Length: 228
Ligand SMILES: NC(=O)c1ccc[n+]([C@@H]2O[C@H](COP(=O)([O-])OP(=O)(O)OC[C@H]3O[C@@H](n4cnc5c(N)ncnc54)[C@H](OP(=O)(O)O)[C@@H]3O)[C@@H](O)[C@H]2O)c1
Image (cartoon, rainbow, N blue to C red):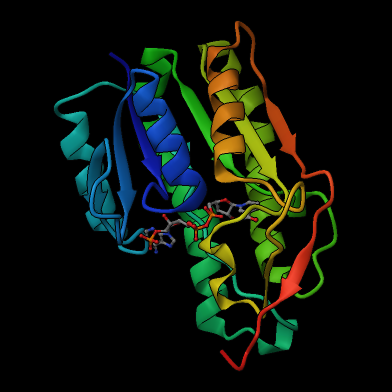
């Protein structure tokens, strides 16, 4: 049985991927802060901003299992005009969305080379496009996609697959700090299960699916009702 470590496994896309991989036969260790009551994998409670605790936790898993798949899905987003995003929010986005994937990859890369394993980076379509009112978030995702491109070239000769996933608007809690949300309806946004299905497809492919972009047919947002 292959062992996978999945960050962001407590919610949204990461939760869908962790559940789908478990169902597919992986032994999944999922990192998050607040998990639903019952998950079908091993939940590991950790704040990614606490690098020391994070690496200790990962080492505890490594001492028992050979991790061969690393899914870096955790992310956080604050929206608004850039002058309105506080330094602490900028720092949180840079650290969760970009620094933690870079550090976790560095920590596990030798193991993954030995295992001829897979690294999957959850970036975003905002990596490729202008993201007004999400300038800092977009910059972290552009950085993550750039990391994925370089890492793919660096690690491919060692048998490591690097897959960068760039979804568009997806119905999750990511928009908890925004004044808008994905509009519910047919084809208006992606469902986390769509992304999990694409990830499984890429994991099973007999070649490297180095980049995946997923987009809903329509892509619609709606304003939140502030009076509620
Ligand atoms: N939703 C979209 O439209 C969309 C589009 C493109 C890309 N993405 C990317 O997809 C990824 C997953 O996001 P999502 O949409 O599924 O949003 P989500 O439901 O809010 O999930 C975010 C996940 O990241 C974890 N996380 C955030 N900060 C953390 C921290 N300091 N320590 C530990 N875990 C932390 C959360 O854990 P807790 O909840 O337990 O704190 C949660 O599991 C993100 O990288 C996001 O940028 C999302």
